[in-house]
Image (cartoon, rainbow, N blue to C red; front, side, top):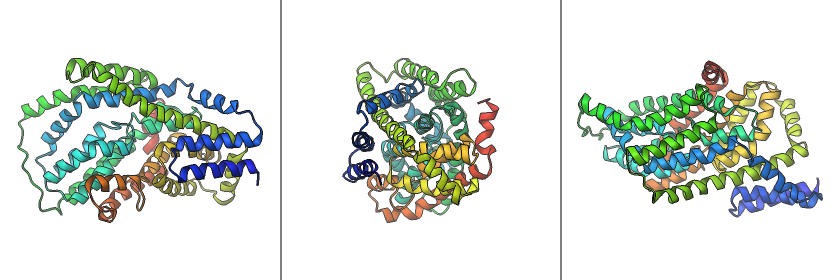
Length: 432
């Protein structure tokens, strides 16, 4: 085996094992290979820069900025109050509010872990106050947090499209993921309704509001709902590109914060800019380093070797997708979602689309949903540790309540495999 390949692999494993951020692990691996193979080190800089010098990639900082602006504009509180006015008087009301908030405020921070850590404590307190057991409250909050990065606008989907070489339409992937994302949310609502019947301590303390009061709350939520309409409707209607929609959405979010809710001030703008810059810088560094490694793997014909291996043992596209599903459930447990996308998309996506003939929208949506599900998968799913820490529970106490939600996500993945219209109907209707 070549010494440069061994050194690159050992460099990655050693740095990863001691907790070095994954972007630096990839950079160390790529630069080690270049040094030992005798190539100019300037190649690394050129490849990393060319990968991030991309107009569609501008959507990332814009979407991240929108999330932070809307969070500080106070619209989340209005949305929660409106949802409570609708669902709060029912037995499973607080569970439905938790799920619906995740669907309507999808991707508030861009990652499921951040959504769970940011909104999770408030959602769990809300549910526990209504009489839900702490274990179920934590499990549901973790499961609903995964809906955010699936329903557009979705940072993982943007990264997936860019990691695939930019050949796959981001707008098409957005449309492809919308129906599965809604189906996951509705499935969680149905399960929570029946599961709530087993909790005798649930309260019905929320007063039934009049139609007039509900309409008043709805009007207060309209600015947040219009943002979704502007972004998703503009993209699917062909009015904006994804990057343009993100830019228009940010201008709208700023206008709402300054002139409608008036909770956004000029003093907050530097803080919001810093928060967005931190997230964007992390993602950009990750994407640049990942692109370098992906280019090196291509030059060494690693995708060809992997393709030949898969085609020699797997002949059915359905068996291939099941294999990928199992792989991503494991990978999602141990790797950050965005890191895993950048590392595995260049290897698996060409294989899926070119060799097995799987539609790129179907495979892309399946890839993202399966990888996110790994965050919930016992015994080492990242969200399990986050929620157990926030709720002060042992992992074992969460497992019984988390399994039904994992099964929901897996069943949706299987449905995507065997029912192509599930992911392709909306993109085809929108002409994407």
